[in-house]
Length: 121
Length: 121
Image 1 (tube, one colour):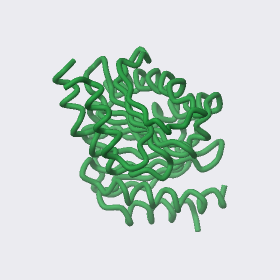
Image 2 (cartoon, one colour):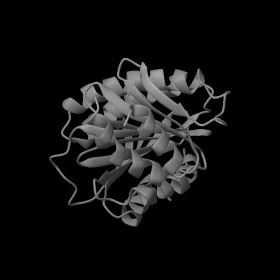
Image 3 (cartoon, helix red, strand yellow):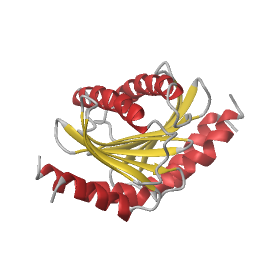
């Protein structure tokens, strides 16, 4: 099973999903699956590069804290919900949902998909 | 109603809540309500100062994006779930839950509490 199959499966399982990517902490997308009707006017890839940068800082910050390793970060704006889940020290999964999307299902599906993606890295 | 009453109400409504604060983007807590049994060994205030710093960057990043203003950020580690909700350009609410806490209820209660806190700023 390729990365893309996993990403397509995530997007198809979650109501309101717009796109799902495997990204490196350098902000470069390894693979992306985006719904056909997904909003062209949302600069998702631009947002994700910024988020990757912030995640890197968070990982470093978390090491100095006692709250344990950061496993999931979510950044929600008026139009888009974004859930990021760490896959390995180098890569993370990111899922974008419309503001009305099924957020709880999105978190769940990313949690179960992360180990499958990790196995292929 | 004081800030503290709102914060106490949030903590009491959400299963697994550890503490709730009103914080400035400078990382300084305006007011905090913490459960008596809340974990001394978790350096929550240290974590929140780091998170405030990251939130500030996010606010700035979001202005350059098309996904609309950032309203909520969540940073989840192995031991602690943290939900932050913007109250005003200067302040945000932060809620810490144990990893088994009721995350969905936490998001909901912060969303309805934010306007009440804003009214008192």
